[in-house]
Image (tube, rainbow, N blue to C red; front, side, top):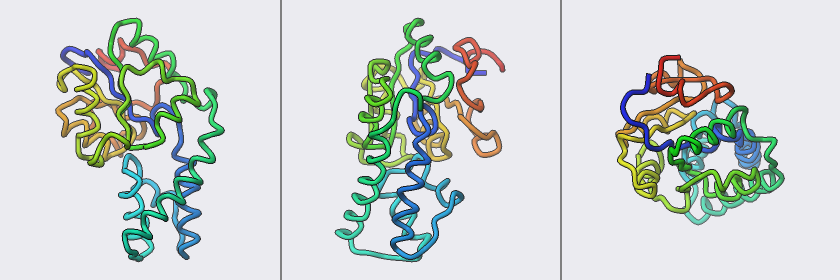
Length: 219
């Protein structure tokens, strides 16, 4: 049960609003293969909710490799170019089930909505899936300097909405994201596996059938 006053909801993007994780995985896997090692789905779990450069550091750690900063920047750009080639083709059909309905219910109840994502491509994705107008504020990788679990992305979201952190609820699918929400002093709904995200205030499988009433009362 989520107690207290809810004035705003802040959503992560990847794995919460849309499933772009598959595109990230394909792009990181291609880079790993080029560098001569295997990158698995299990490895990819460590990259959820993490910034691009921090993700690259994890990837190189998995491969046991080290490179100068200039080469790492080039690798990150190569990965992003491949990733963008996929997301440029995204359509509203890729929005996860129940998300548009829940966002509209929040709007109808005058609850403010923000996006809090490490992705620098978040504005493009929102544009492609035609959800830009649903968000009152967007904080993405272009406007933060610290990666989750640092709470910067969510605190900036609350600031731009003009809402106190304790009156915000975050929706996250990643461990680092749940930790970031808690570090921000916000309540958090985990999207996914209760065993993985059990330290969130509430864990749900997705937004299909989820309502504002269920957010305020026990499921």
